[in-house]
Length: 257
Length: 219
Image 1 (spheres, chains in turn brown, green):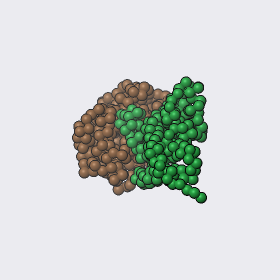
Image 2 (image 1 turned 180 degrees about the horizontal axis):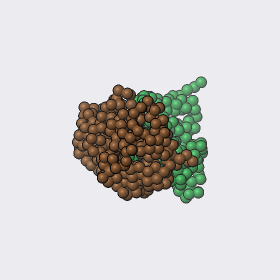
Image 3 (image 1 turned 30 degrees about the vertical axis):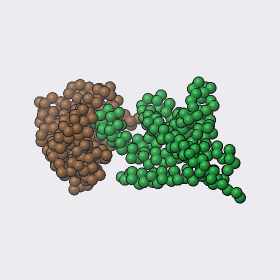
Image 4 (image 1 turned 45 degrees about the horizontal axis):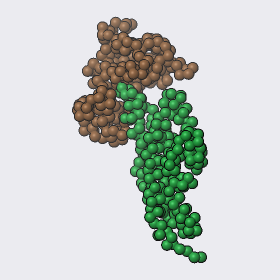
């Protein structure tokens, strides 16, 4: 069986460590003692049925949600509870949402530039230069002056990735980035993500795209009912899952090794 | 019946002054009530229970009192109770601002609430503070939804300024009613008053229609 030492970047320092994380919504236990970690340069995919806690864990990573127990360590330092300190940590993370959440009153270029201008106090000219380079990187330089309403779902999501990259984050968080997309535009978004992974970006990805997880992830975590059912390299999870629940879940998706 | 329309023409200068004062009251009230409305809405939406409670109490109080009562209160009670005494014009302005701020607060609150929570989260995830997210992302989008409602409020306000005539502010209604009582030309003066209000109000109402079409939110 696969062991932890097979992990590609086990020698690398962990960037995000989740240590027995608990999260409650009223009496509902959304996360029940989750312990996983992401090493530098690694892609970690969180999979599992809807409502199993994957997205909640992601939202606890940049303190969009506060945790009720355990610890989240970023570069070894616990996530601050103070809002001002939490903001500094968030600036080092990029986040991509299921519904893109581009700002509809700004064009693609200014959507990407808004972070550096507002948060880092960069000049508009310089921020737009940076934004343009990032739009080139996601293949949308020709759409820089389009407003979100004039872009397809896949294009909007690529702009959203560029917006997150504009803050030059150490970690990228993806919350079901392709779930709201038409099938024909999913590929263009996954390609951008794969390119990022190849460049060594540390990524945490909540996804239902099993083929992507299988080929790009270094580490796969299977969730169910707020708990980690199983975790390991994709080869283990997809070809020789040890947990019954993992086999059920993958079987439902029509995945058979 | 013996009608004398010359009475209107003879008093044209006073009527014009009154009309200008009506416009001035409307403009000044909005100039005050828009920022106050924004502040009240932000208080209401803040995490502080004290601020939210104070804002809600204010809004519910003034939204549910007849404006004319507030006008009388500001004129007769405020000087006694709070030892603040203003001219009739300022008193009328205060009463209008108290009332319209409450309505504007609700308008802004609804506008801000109509913007998806995900927009604020996206701004915060980029590293903005809540205030920056509000200023850069939420409020610019809320404006489009708020503007048509503010425009309607404007038109109502324009007509409601006539209520301050009861404390002898020399705006259009007061001037017209004064001429009526001194000349006993009731029909002529009331008709003239109606015509002047209508001629001034109609273009504003049309402008509101245009704004509502122009800023219609399509999603």
